[in-house]
Image (cartoon, rainbow, N blue to C red):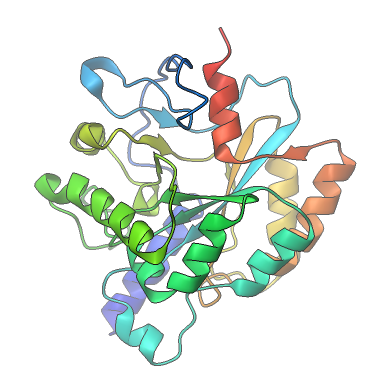
Length: 275
């Protein structure tokens, strides 16, 4: 059990911003002819490799995407059964009250544990649900102590998460994927090419995992946000207990600075539309 707890702690800390194992080269945006019926994605890289989106760094618009990782690993069912809370309904309520469009990167295991919440988030036009794997196991070796997914099972793990979303009633999950721990390499990008997802990382680390004081979390976000930023936060009470309080500071202060909150799909769509 101690090993499981340590791995979970390290993986959540990793998702809060120790850098990814490898940064993919910048890729050009996909044509937008089907944008009306399909969410915007980036064009595959050389050889069809999965593209990676980190931010709309060249944006002239003061937009920012708050993203929330709803983490639960495949082996944490007993901990949930014993009363540990991997959800954070108060955070979702606050985002609704403040009218903050957001992207929730959800694991399939989280959707199985909290199907009513997953369905409510997925059906609320304020939010969009994206893929954070089924298992929350690593897609590279040496990723903060996480168990690893075999290369020939990586695409299946992603597809299993999409199936879990559909089973929970999330009808239109977005074709975006965030690697557990933020760890990826070229092998992982090639392995996911058949899924058609755009991998989404971040450029602003909130530091909310295991934080006990909301003020430093809020300050780190406020100091880091630039036009087109993607901020990584968490939607997990046990691992990120102060996120909701930090949001109550972050949102009004960024709005006072002229920022507008958008979903990841809008940032990617704006990138796709730029020459």
